[in-house]
Every structure is written in C-alpha cells, then in structure tokens.
Length: 145
Image (cartoon, rainbow, N blue to C red; front, side, top):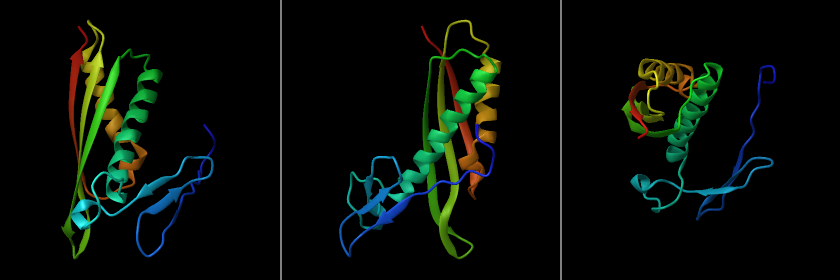
C-alpha cells in the first residue's frame, strides 16, 4: 500500500439536458442521471446508486483483505446496500445504510470467525466510515454444499 494521503480524481460534464458524463483518468466513463425518484429515467446509474454501490464494493474489498490476512477460506460474498435518503436537520441527506451480506464458506468452516470478519469489515470500510447516517449490518453465513 502507498503511504497516506491518497488522492482520487473524478470529473463530470453535462449539457442542459441528457445524461452526465462521469470519468476518471485511466477508467472507462459512465453516464449518470437523476434517479427516477427525482424525475430521472429508469435503468441509469445515479449519484445515489453509485454511493450505495461504493459502500457495497468497499465492504467486499475490506472483507477480502481481512480474510486474506486471517488466512480465512471462503467461497463467495454477496452484498446489497440499501441507503435511505430523507429530510434530516433541514436538509435532504442519506440517513441510514443497511448492508446485507451473505458469505458462502466451505463445509466445516469456523462460522464464528466468519461472522467476526464480516463485522470487522463493516467497522473498517473506509467509504462507510466517511459517511453520516446510521449503519446496520445484516450478515448471513452459509456453508457450500
């Protein structure tokens, strides 16, 4: 890992109508729009869905690093994040994030250790730690069979 601080750069550009082009050096671009709840089209990434995706992605990458450091064997991790946007303290903002994680492990695995690593990943996720709002983890461990 490189020493801190790390700097990340993204850009966005748009005309008076249509999507917003989002890019970052060396990465493929995306087109985003307002979510349907704000009058945007269905089927297009929005800043709100990107934020929830970032939380889910960071959670999985954090778990992966913790599991590797602990020499913990696992098969798959699925993660879904529900972010709630609401009025709070006179502003519209995300007020809560619920992370639903399902970890698949080999038969005979230490389930208590799996649950501890899932909890630790939620506590250490740098994206989640950078956000306001309550956080809830709903984790399930299933043995592959």
